Length: 303
Image (tube, rainbow, N blue to C red):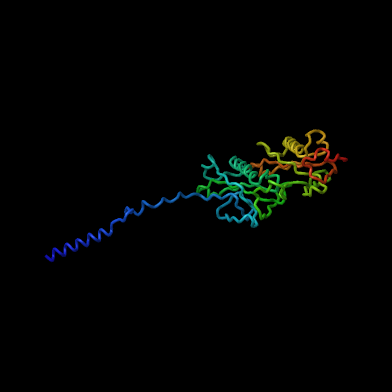
């Protein structure tokens, strides 16, 4: 009798122990099926509106990404980030300099940069550069391109050195700005060739003034006389509009134009914006801004 009693006690204890291992309400006994799946790994994409302490670059590896607050000293600001589409996106390496894909990317950057600064960015001392991910990042799936803007010391005759800023360029040209191109004193050699364009306060004597930008169509970089003919013609139209006078012989007798295209490398990268400046003939000078001033504001050349 004792033996059977011992067996029954042992069996009962086993039932109690087994029942203690049962699942509580809401638990199904699986350790894996209630975990959320891991998110798909995605390559890093730089954000818009970040400022960087380094000069603009053509390749921006993640190892050099060190953004700073735009109120701190910086030399570059990302004004837009785009994405390469097919067929470029399907290639094994980033697009090459001067390729159609880079020109398309620059075109997108160009439009977005105007929106960002509030006006045609070439109307200011600004430089725009397209930066690509490194080949390693491209292999890892990065397909972005970064549109970076920097302030430069001058743009006459070509982009000068990059200068440090302590403010964002967002909306910088929407209203009057020290960045805006305005009035100049053109310096000439004995053969009348231009040797320099010095920035001058518009209230002081000057013989040149920025009148606008002509965005040229697809065409060769100007090197021959015939290449310059349409450029001078378009700049003369901008000058007439700027002054507020017909584009006729009366204007042509008082002022010419100085067109300044971007560098050949920038042209190859898609920048077709040509800055145009009026040029008073002879020794003529004015001491006022000529926007909307009319033909009478231009001196009649005496030499």
